[in-house]
Image (tube, rainbow, N blue to C red; front, top):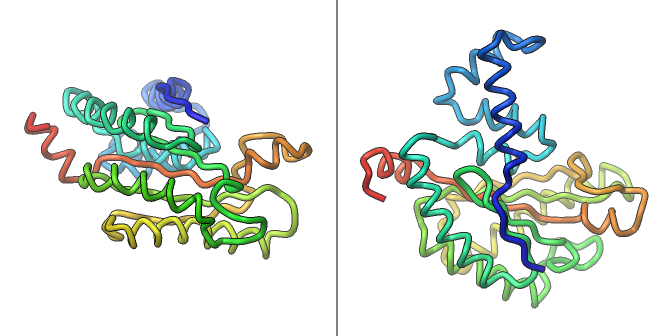
Amino acid sequence: MKNFRINLSILAIIAIILSSCASGGGGMSKTAKGGIIGAGSGAVVGGVVGRVAGNTAAGAIIGAAVGGTAGALIGRRMDKQAEELQRDLENAKVERVGEGIKITFDSGILFATSSAELQSGAKTEISQLAQTLQKYPDTNILIEGHTDNTGNRSINQPLSERRAESVASYLTSTGVDRSRMTTQGYADDQPIADNSTAAGRQQNRRVEIAIYANEKMKKAAERGEL
């Protein structure tokens, strides 16, 4: 399944948040408004956007954005990387979000039921991802595991964490620098479909990967060197 598009809905969310800050922010706290307005702190913006959008991977990308001419240069670099990923990853959804890239793998492609061990076919897919990540070393990588709501949290939370870590470990074994990666598990906290149906639960069992510029790339973009 291939999907390559610019996710304007997430950008609209951040625009609404920033507009709210500029107009007084309504019910937003002074801390939240100050954090967004002063946004050298991408983590603050990313956290807010992630909560509003229900997706922390997209929030992390938006939170890391620099905007302006530098952001446009980063975006063009991400366009090229996303095109390669869209071409090479047969079983993933590749989306351009802001100044970064979000990749979604169905967990059924990567793992057997209730397992965090990558299946052999999944390793081929992750190896393809690794090749592109190594060609573009100046990015950070957030890897998130998600489950459906079947079973209890004491099982789903550690399972989601182990699945994210399995992807990170395999990327590391193929030569991607582990220091670029952060992993997180969310159990069933961020559903993208209806958990009351089998099809919806399948969509919710997934691994999401956010790719966004690190400080080295941002500085190069600000100097016009990308």
